[in-house]
Image (cartoon, rainbow, N blue to C red):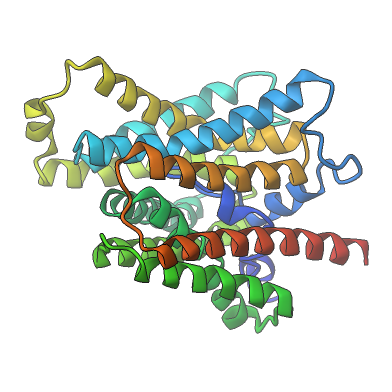
Length: 359
């Protein structure tokens, strides 16, 4: 087995839906928990239309929060020209840590996997890189979202499986099925065509989105290794990563003079801005818990469906809410091809996961 964590750290694409359920400020589940979540409800199938209200409420809550997370960040960064990103992430991480701490004191700590504890001097060495990569991923993603339209941003972020597959092939020399390779190539081809048809092309935004995809893959590797040695789970890693992120965010916020920019910001007294800011912070802090709740009370298939519906809905609303998106006809075709590839990838990964488990 080699070093601790070596077995799972390379399995960076085992998740059937990781790339469609990750949103700004919310790192994905660790790989072991993703595998466990894929098993939840496997004998039940999709329970989205259950006659009981809880599964439907969970699916609606997660899907709505996922859509709002991207759109509220875009509104805050672009429409309101709020550029104090380090201060925003500082508040969001503080709220995330507080929410997880409070939730861990309730009777839901076991079903939501909130029974975590951090012991040992090596914990900082393992969790700190995860926190740094998570922060860099979110920062790159937020700047990419600020510089690009929502449809183009969604298209670029769907390429996340590509660097994950490359890392998996490098670390484990893993070969991938033809349909997986075709689906990922479809995603990338759609992104390329969409980029060529984008009349408001922002090269820096494209590069930042690509960097975010790579950082997400690296995050998965280090998060798996940390989870192997510490057994914290996704929620524990998120909790301690949020705590460690606080001092890392304070320094650049001070050095970049965000305090003075916040004091001079013109829109503090506008209710619409206050509502957008509060919504962004609340959704960013609670999205991870909503993801776990949705999968645990429905099924992984339902979460997969909701994730894809979220991506399509966000893309469509992005066309409508933030002014005219200037795409040539083949750019729009690229967005559609990219979306189709993302759906294909999710379905194929889920089927392969079930087949390997049944075998």
